[in-house]
Amino acid sequence: MSCHVTALCTLCYSCVEVCPKQAILELPGCIRIDAARCNECAGHRVGPRCMQICPQEGAIRRDPADGEAI
Image (cartoon, rainbow, N blue to C red; front, side, top):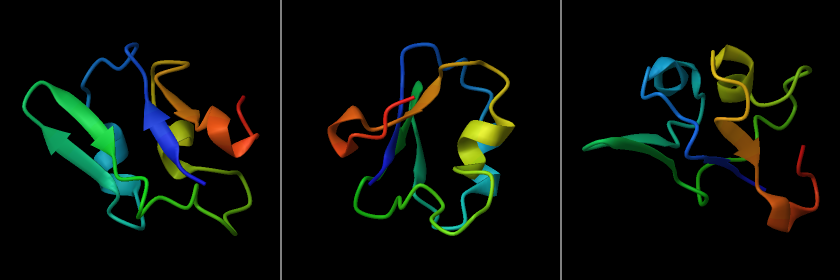
């Protein structure tokens, strides 16, 4: 399970600091989520922290390959 950043991302970087797995990478001109590290904040009662903090709806989504797409 992992989340991914969509084209709706505004590069505000608010998600980077809240990731407990340090799976969100700041790259030149974009943000990526390392699927090997991301576990969608398993055990966190409200779901992925990056999705909760993101000001742009739809900029971070659960991986549709996991069958848990929102």
